[in-house]
Image 1: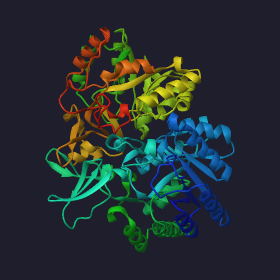
Image 2: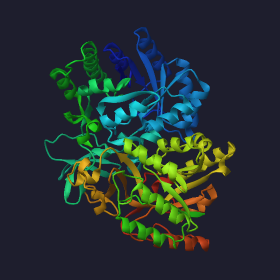
Image 3: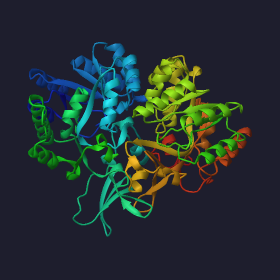
Image 4: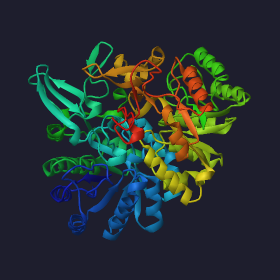
Length: 331
Length: 302
């Protein structure tokens, strides 16, 4: 399986390339991509440098243009597509049908991947995107169990890429408006979830509180680990219970699923984390490269090594990892 | 302006569903959507029952549309969807691109629900070319975006070939998950959820630790805590080019909402404002004004 790695900056990209990424995905410095965070991403000059660095080392570059343009911003998205095409990148990762249509029309030779934000969870949907826009690959949302991934793979008209490691969306990507309900930004519209501009921390007699646009997301006792107030990971009250009503702050880690995913015919594994540091990228890519190489050289009896898992646990959100939806019990 | 009744998003006993639609036959709504749009495990009415109910309602003079699941993952979801596409006695509402594909392959006209991501006229045009007759705007979009989409569609020459519907009253469908939050609240695994949604005919409220109603849990769906209320916006909607306003069913008071609204429409009046609380609990309208969805905007002020 191909290893597709995140980079939010040139140093992170270099780390990914040096540690053995087969492809690195990046975004431009605006709301055309789903990690539209301050200080992150690539302008044209940086993207050119990224491409040169990757090319000379045999690594592919994908560009994510995977938010949903509204009429007022349409030209930014078409401009992003044209810029990426002019750079000569290896593929575009797109969610919106309008943008897919534009890219397919104007740049028919450029490989198109359906972004996870496109929210295609079944082969029927994939057929639509393949027939309409000629997509060559799709990234599956993190809502499918392993059996469901297998079912989609059996019918899929295109190559499939799945998430292997990183922060975990529990909602079907591209179908979650929780963030825009509470703030004015969502992944679909702005490439942001629970945006930092709306986060406030305060010390109160009840403990340390995190708020998002003034809505209380969580409250921590002294000594408790406080996490970023992503909406779906807060502690809320349902009935008489106060708990992580939607999701605990954990990370996805699927090292142990390398054999079944590979046997199913999954083409690529994606690591999440364009918003993370170069050190994070280096650590995670190194482990995954070694794991995939180990599996490739000797598939029989493959098991994740303890040192790999420890290395990944150290950088994981909440210092806990899970198989997520791939494992039915999580659902 | 036409009024529609969206699909019941909750899990009600079969008898309650049937009674509800009997009542709605006399309610002043023009279009009735029905069918399971949230969770395939809900089987009080099986696919065949929904098809039969749709066939019965078709004779009432109302336009009937069969709604389909928003999240299609398993083999059984696909076969259920096929059954609906092959046998529907009426239009089908696609809530996933898989359904769009199935309907387009069969050369059947279709509508799309609020979970199909249409954010611009180019996307709308793609769907129109495949047989789209009506679309429901994604709930997070605002009035000015809708206006621009319809202006673009007019410039592209197809705006008058389709109808536009806006989710105008009810708990907003905000997200879909692999996880079931009702099962989680009851400490049950999803595979053995005991169909617990049936205990919560209007979903289960999730509050912040300060007691603010934030979201409504409805199985794998997360809805707004507050009731979205755009009924007072109907004149602006008419001006923008909206054809249909959707009321999303609750277990109580749905007919009353429809009746009051229809009365006001008939008299060309400003019918229902947020200030007149129509149901218990909070109301909101922020999305329509380009604000956070939970916000309340009255006379241009948050």
